[in-house]
Amino acid sequence: MRKLMIYYTVPFLIPQEEKESYEDYLDYAAIAKRDGIPFEMISFQDSPGRFLTDSVIYEKLSEIGDDAFPITVLNDEFVKCSSLPTKKEFAVWFESLETISFDRLVEEASKIEHHHFPGEEEIMNSCSGGCLSCDPTLCGLYDLNFDN
Image (cartoon, rainbow, N blue to C red; front, top):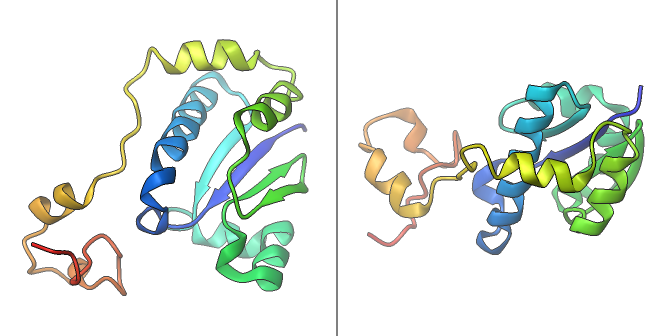
């Protein structure tokens, strides 16, 4: 079965300047899931076991470490690591799935609620400071070094 997957690190480690691109790809993944298209964005935070059981991912992480993220896999073959696919690369790989065109995917994504990673201010405002999750070594959503 033809499939396209992008494995990425936990969201709080994504550089701020790249978050919008990740959000776009997450929108595309939402459309893919809705329409049964074999494209997924897989977060280490949400599915850590998949990183250990997928031999392609495990091999790249063993070889390169965390700098391998994001890792793009097409039809169970490694195609790119250490950066998201460009829109052009993604369009070619996505269209190789022979489902819908990339242009149609973008059009469909414009009709759904845009994925949004919480910003530092949102994290600070939603965190009471009284739970174990406020330890960045446990969840990473709250960084004690954030300026208040």
